[in-house]
Length: 610
Image (cartoon, rainbow, N blue to C red; front, side, top):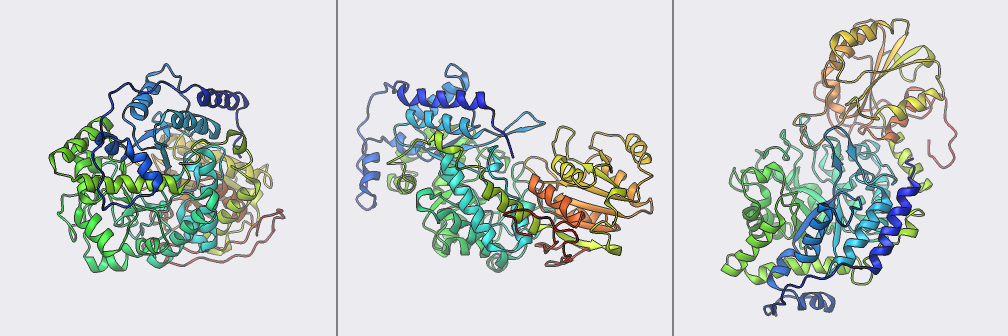
């Protein structure tokens, strides 16, 4: 559980309260008479009221969503002035919450700071802002102090759609409490490429039907409570699972035919559309079977209009993946990409590198006739109708006093831990090493992805409750081969080794999450000692390909704290091991495999299912 900082909470609360009563001055730009709206476009009275005073440029701006980090910047800072420009002057349609990083540590936002900032921005906005976020594994992906769910692949290993539906309900409830109405999840990509460097554990698995069931359940969860209804999004259309390139860095290509797409990639997207998903996010990938080999799907009318809208019958919002990603930005300017995306069939232009250039370029495209005013207004009406659907016409401010009673609830945390426990999958267990017969005689080696990471802390703390006197060491990728060899030499008194290896994936890394630095050498050294080694993959399950001779192998499919706790409990025999592989590990294990082991020493945890 993450503890809030009282002083920062109070400060954020006061900031928000003050903002409600002291809105910045409106722009003094001269009013322009709006062009006549097309009679063929249907819009509610609320949407027509919002559009009544919009100029062409205002309509274009409604399609643009810019990023924020969730902090509450000083009103005299350059950052704050930039938000004033985009929201008050440009009148952009929405925001997307992203994390801040200094290159070493990713900094998440605090719930009260997020809500305080959004309240202030909503006060500035003429038309209510739609606020969005990549809330994969729940709001905890971006915001501390919220329920921490495992990654999607852990849900695939647990195999119960009820878990996915529950995650949808909690994610929607917590998002709405923070002032976020639009969730960019679930991931509908079928991860059938073990070398995928960016999807991987973000996918529910490699079986299209199983992925479709979990995708559908999550969508149902986000729509279950009408009071906390949140827009759901499937991504990344038409399917990013069979790629070996990170689209944040370059444009990947899927070289499969339409029949393969119909039977694999498109299956979860079809199910999502049938389930009433609100939006579809595009992928910056080339699909030569459908459109030119050098054209990203985001800019392809054959994919967004012909395939998605005509063939699959999708009528909701089409949102681009971030336009700042290299899969787009390397080949197209901000303005050109935006115009092409709208021509292809997109409605929302997400995170362009230069919002001003985008608004200018799209406005010019409409004025020149390249994009018709009716085509533009089709997208504007979709966005404004979605704002009305989530109640922004009636309430645009978050209730700061209610946040503490909504996010990070004990019940949700218990369920998240249950899901993590159920997901643990035992792939190999030579000599029935797991659960450990003598846990106090084992040495526990933590291998985090970074020396600055907190990975392994929850695992160690959980183990110490039972084996406090055992040997615990942490080896990070910055250690040299000599340092690791010397460290291993100090562990010779151990009867066995338990290695917790953190192997997640992330944007801009360029490679599939594997052990970094000289850690593979260190692990091989432990395996060569002749003593049994239990390897726990906290993240990427495919790591077993590199260490096929390990004695025992467990996968959690996520590196979050509940999965660390579940791993510790599994090796100690405190929970039953029940997971099944949602993917194939080439040369090592087949889809659906999983050794079932009953709990040897069951925990007694009130409210948790064991």
